[in-house]
Length: 272
Ligand SMILES: [Zn+2]
Image 1: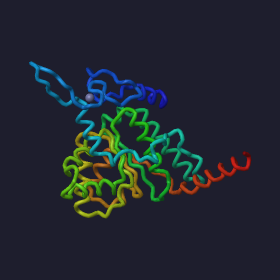
Image 2: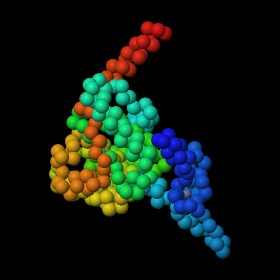
Image 3: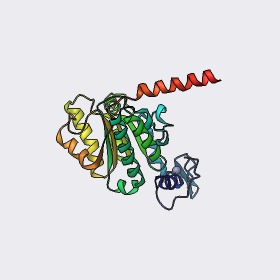
Image 4: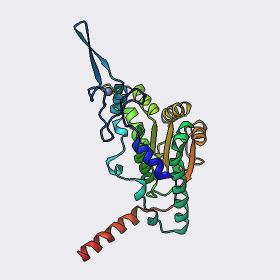
């Protein structure tokens, strides 16, 4: 069932515009078929040439603004198929991660419907290196085949907001917030490590509330549960209403994966 859905997502057009009258772009190309990537359409009338912005331009500007929120290079190739459930050693962890994977699969196979409802995920565990970011990246890599997906560490989002306050800033704070609020899917990694200063709560609330109102999907990873998160209720209530909470194992697999990798390498070396 999940494979069917992913196949469907893969086959969907990746053209720059979602409107039905736009011609389909070739599957392997992100270049706009209307303007061929120039973002402008030239027309001639009475010998006067004018340029009007292509439909794809707005989206292109938005994605340039938000380049910091692209899926990080290190996570790009990570898909859900290569998520190693066997890396967890404690029995309780094995059970938790199996449950988590089941929810993620069901969620993705019903994604179009979930998206209509604006339902996202809140993936949490206290342990660092438990695989939360890894699975969030896997989800993002699946969804990016069909939707505009942004992925950013929450501290980076706040830093980028601060950067807009500088006099030589490339874009305004409003433009940045607007871009964060309008992307189809926003993954906020490591949510809740920020000092809960007033301005931070205000900005995060602005983003989360705007996405809430417009039923846009937000996926969080956090070292805190929604109950222990240091934000005021207006933020946690919004998240509670619009996410499935997924408890991840309280076990770090970062070291196990590194060990396994070493063992594999050593085996190859000895057998080679
Ligand atoms: Zn275009």
